[in-house]
Image (cartoon, rainbow, N blue to C red):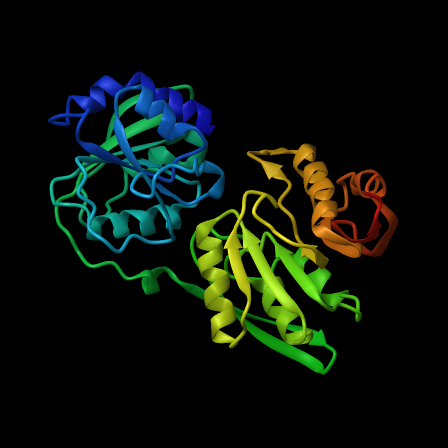
Length: 349
C-alpha cells in the first residue's frame, strides 16, 4: 500500500510543486514516510525533511533531514507538508493537531494514502485549524487530498494519551497495573488476549538480562519488572510512539529500563538470558511468515548459549519448525484455540 501511495505522489509531483514558490529550494515536511518515500520525492524534485515514526524508514541521513521523535515541539519553517496517513484515525488527528502548532499559518498540506486507510472519510470531516480537505488526485487505489492551515493553536500530547488497567494473578496474589498508551500503538484500551496468556504462564526462573521485543505500550516490560525486580530490563520497538508509551508506563511505576528503537533486532547489542515477546507477524493484511523466521533466527544471535526465547503467537502459525531449526529444546507452555506460548532454549548456533 505504501508503494502505491509513493507512486501517486511522484506522478502528481508537478501538481504539488505548482503550489510552492520554489519547490527545489524550499523544504517540504514529509510526515510518517514509508520506506523509500523520501528518496522517491527527492528524485521527483522535492527538498524534504522527514518526520519519521517508524525506524524502518530511517536512512541514516543528516539530523537536519530526519526527525525521529513522537512529537514535534519546535517550529517547522517549511513551504508545505505531505502527510502519509496511517490507518489509525486518532493518530492522524494527533499528527494534524501537532502540525497545527508548529507550521506557519497558510502552510499547504497534502494527505496521501491507500483507500484501505479510510482516507476518503477525511473529505467529510472537519479538523480544527485546517481548511476542509479537497480531493486532488487518485490512482492505484490511493487518494491525494489537499488543505491549508488556517490558524495555529498549542499542542498538548496529554490530550491524546490514554490509560487502562489490567488485573492478573501474580506470585503475591492478584496485581493491578496501569498502562499508558498513545494512538498508533498496539492494543489500545485493553491488554490483548495473547499477551495476557503469556503473562499468566511466565516461568519462575526469569533472571539476568531480559529483552522485551516489540514492547508496544510496555505491558510485558511493566509486568516483568514488577514480578522479577532483579532483572536487567531492555525494551525495543520499531515505533517511536510505542517507545514513548513504554517510557511513560514504566516511569509511572518507578521502573528503570533501557528503552530504544530498532528495526527488528538490528540495534540490539550484547547477549541476553531471555527474549520475551508477543511478536508482530503481519505485513499489511497478509501473514508474513518470513518475518517470523527472521525474528527467531536473529534471536539466537542475541541470546547467550543457554538463553531462552519466550513468545506467544497465533496457534495457526508454524512456529515449531522454525524454533526447532534454531533451538535444541522447544516446548509449548500453554495452548488455546487462538494462541500458543512457546519456550525455546539452548540455541543451536
